[in-house]
Image (cartoon, rainbow, N blue to C red; front, top):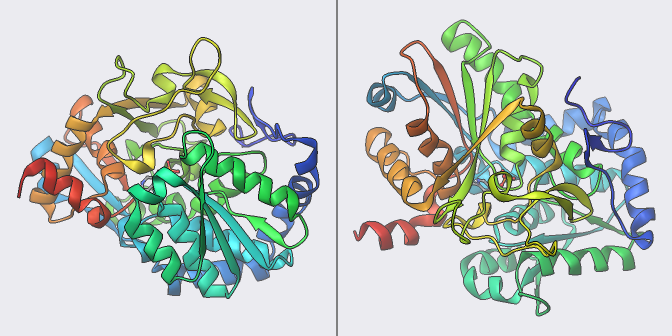
Length: 393
Ligand SMILES: *Cc1c(COP(=O)(O)O)cnc(C)c1O
């Protein structure tokens, strides 16, 4: 495939494994074995069974009639919000826990910012009875108390990280340090299409079930596998990668990622990496990054914790650069409006992250016959406090 990662782990100029010498053994084992394992019939069978009976797949493809009428076009929602734990994240953690078992690992580590990936990791560790340690910036531990409690109830140890800004980047550094010290028994579950090769490719493959299902569901409901366009929000980019994956070579399908503009891409309070970023290396991967003129990573901002990340997966940097996918940005204000519109037109409260993809509908010329698929990455349950604060119910 034209947009596949190459043998060295690059998408065009982006990606690779920019790792310290001491992490070489961990990454090398994963790189050598991941494809053979995840393509084996035994793995595929176990993965499919869990996706079906534990995660609750296939997720429905829902024709949103009243929202379609509002925009004068056809809009379908891929309902990842209906998965167990309320988002697409479990597709990846289920895949990685099975992989960890095949590699003979007994201990799992993860980093988390908002806590969503930490919860998804703690969930699959409980499912498989593996020890789970989640690194989290001390500031995030305070800000995301409900998710910390969930992880603890699921049996995970949550380690607050007090270095740096006490947020996601610092938690990631600590998780990498742990992995270097425990290469034998530990697998590191990364939560998006980021980090050193082979993570971006591996996570994209686990999430690709989204577009695989879309194809057959669209064929059944519209008579064609091919929509006019697919829209997905982009933080690290895993739900978008999954929604785009099986359409990458079908160039007639327009692919649109939507980043978090925060207070606006012209302000310093934004997380729209592709709009304001430059190439650099973050989390052992060459990709587009938000940075100052000295190359220091700048602190991102978004109303949605899941998009509040200063980088983006190397696949998206590449799709952006070569023009295969388009990337827009939606502000906090636009996102809140879009979330309310979906709620009152369809009775579905979306995650703030997913509402970025919905907000982009306002920015496009939509024709009556177009088929628009929105990847609804998660449920708004976790965001009720933000919604209530803003709308004042
Ligand atoms: C974590 C999260 C995201 C952002 O992650 P990606 O890797 O960009 O998909 C988006 N939506 C929801 C609901 C999330 O929990």
